[in-house]
Length: 139
Image 1 (cartoon, helix red, strand yellow):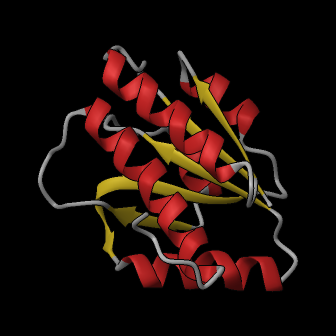
Image 2 (cartoon, rainbow, N blue to C red):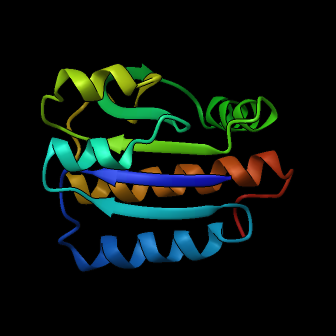
């Protein structure tokens, strides 16, 4: 499975860079995870290819559990979808990007600092793979 995390913001905090690097390393056992910081909606569109299942992370999205995220990832893999793109944007997206979004999910209905949000997303992807592999999450 190929997972891409796309943002319209930049990771500025050292702790967030270190945490996302750690989760990327841990996830290498399960999938290929890449991260792309985009400067514009045009650049985001270039990253969202037609074969990718696009998940928009937004406060307007649906709240789901870790188990539901794990099931969604598993179901996509079973359906032959091997590319998932998680798009994090706290700004209004243009219509062309909105057309590519398959589902919108929320980590919380509260506004969360971008650095914390990016770490939470990486952690939840990692947790989903641990759940799907029937492995304990906490070491």
